[in-house]
Image (cartoon, rainbow, N blue to C red; front, top):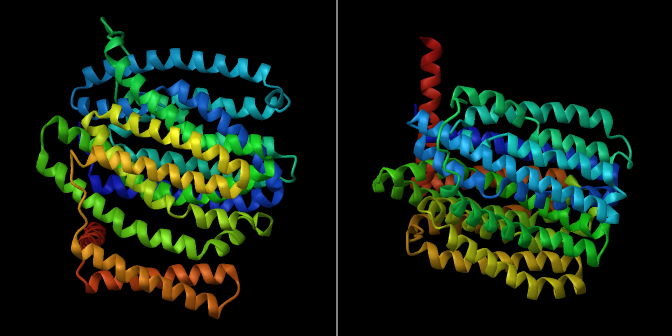
Length: 488
């Protein structure tokens, strides 16, 4: 099977994730002003609950199957049989997960009173499993994934402005979230016939997959616990407004992180393939480049988010979410921590079949959450939730680093270190100067981002930063090829 270009895959996946970021940037200011913090809180709390049932339905199939599909992609017969085995396991897990959900809905009074909201969001339990996203990620079909996803986002965007008109339309908003997030999975199932056959095989071996899947499932479940437990504890000890305030700030963090870690999603199957064929040269080249590029980007973004927190919240959520500003400032270091944690997991540990080490780090993070989170959230509500999340990510980083360093030494080049040092000083000067010159949040944000981007890029070129120059060379080379193809 033809192997896609890593650079093209990264480009399209960044485009997909960028559109996933732009979508809520367009929709959330509108939604926040229409539904207010109570309406946003209801939907976000319900989505948090449903996310646990989605984890049960998916087990650890997505990560495990992506890795194994990458290894089997050159043999269609073996690939097809493997996919059948994953589908069988997934059907069983979906039945169990949805049964648990119906039981929960019936006996939990608060959810039953909002049963329309929960039932609509629960569609994601089925569609998420039916999508076979792991097949397309393992085969690195990111052009298809990107085009398909953007199409459904555009449809959902149009429907949002048509049907969400007042604060009582939070159920309609939940339906549009479901369409945007999972609607495209129907196409995945239909399109899968291009890559695998659906003839019945003999001797399906389900058992051989279960141990790895269960470990990854346990990891995903525990990982979701430390992430979503903050929201749930806040919802129990506080109220819907508290959840809305915290969720708004963390949603902005997630949007930024999703772009930064999009490279890991693309590179993960390729690294698994290189490990399978024992190509250590290519493996180390990708790991070294990925880590240094991450460092080059993450530090300036974190600082920028901290300095521009007020402007970002006022633009994207409005003055009704003023309390989210301090939460966003506290949460800003999470960008670096999650980006590094994600790198160590999906570029070092998981391709090397180190699921148990990943699970251990998440369990330790949950223990920290139990001892620290309850007291901080009880006393400080939104601020306590933000501090808790930073501490948890730091604890997980320390544990993951201990395991990852045995497989790959995380080294920052001297040029990168100098580039980031000068860049952050330059960024602080630019943002603080612009904030003194202008008062409107949108003007401050746009000018700050634009001016810093240009200055940072020039600084990297002047210092002859290897990774920046490689990126510029790749872009110019691609443009020249495009012009040449048009002439021909």
